[in-house]
Every structure is written in C-alpha cells, then in structure tokens.
Amino acid sequence: MMTKVKICGLTRPEDVETAILYGADYLGFIVEAKSLRRLSVMRAAALSLPAKSSARTVAVVVNPDDALITAITAQMKPDYIQLHGDESVGRVAEIARLSKTAIIKAIAVAADEDMKEAEHYAGVADFLLYDAKPPKGETVRGGHGLSFDWNILTTSPLPKIWALAGGLTPENAAEAVRRTKAPILDVSSGVEASAGLKDALKIQAFMKAVRNG
Image 1: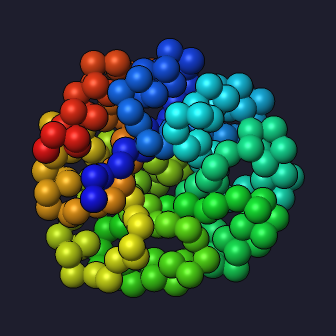
Image 2: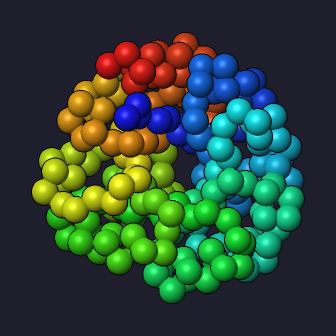
C-alpha cells in the first residue's frame, strides 16, 4: 500500500496550492493553538477551502473546549480533527460525538510505555499519530523537527491506520517508509523555509522521496 502524506502547519494559500500540486493526501491547519503556525478558525476555513476536492483537510487543536470544536465544524468543516494535547480517552469520545467528525489523536512518544498508553485511544480515534515528545518545558506541542526512536514502533502493536510524525525531512522520508512501513507520514518543519512558511522545492522533494522510495 502506498504511503500517504500529510503536510501540516500550512499558513499561506501558495503553500496549500503547492501541497495539492504535488499530491499531498492530507493538509493540516493549526487552529487556535500555541504555535508559530497558528490560525484563527476563519483563516483556517478560508485556506482549506481550495483543498476540499483534492485532499483531506485536518484541523489541528490542543485541548479544545466545546466552543472551539463547534466553531471549527461549523465554519471549517474539516474531514478530520486532530487532537494534539492531553485529551483523555473520554474527552476524545466527547469531541467525536460533538463534532461528528473523524478524529486523529496525536500521541507523544519517547519510550515503549508511551505506546502502551496509546492503545487506549485506538478504539475512539479514527487513527493515531505518533509524534516525538516536545523538549522538556516546551509548551508548543509539535513542529520542533525532533524524531523519536523508530525501533519503538517495531515492538509495539499498531492499529491498521496510523501516522508517523517528528523530524521527517526529504532526506529521511524514504528511510522512514522502509523502516516503519507507516501508512501515513506527517511533515511540517521538514518542508519549511522558516516556521509556517513552506518551501515548494522541499515539498516536491519530500513527495518524491515517499512515492519513489
């Protein structure tokens, strides 16, 4: 099965166009979360609109309240809501019921124990995204360009659909596919010129590396 690609942290129309042009399968927009790539709900809705017929859109949030979830589903109408915070299994289920939208749950990974914790979410999220834990003391959840030991994935049970994130670049994307057999690769800072500003050549190179191995 061909590995799919999610390009996350999009902030500009031209970057959305580039991601669509080179065949990204999922486009991620960080909505009202602490990040250099942060967007308002209205801005995320406008940016994601051109992608509706070409890729699946993802609203990335951190510990959202009900009001934010309601605004996102009403204005942006994403294909997925990605929960990247400390949401409990119960809270994930609540958000799924409230939004009536497919859910991605991000899991911060540094050790085997984190993978065991992740198993609890497998029944309530549509798929899990395994990402590197942020640096100690860092309040921004993703986009740090850090990876974790991929060997952890080989010794843990994995759901049928899952995504790998953290420190992915055009240079290591093919290796990530070979070593982890990830159904989806999620990239953000690895295809940027600077935080929030994507580099078209890097997006092209990343997609080529994944597609051609």
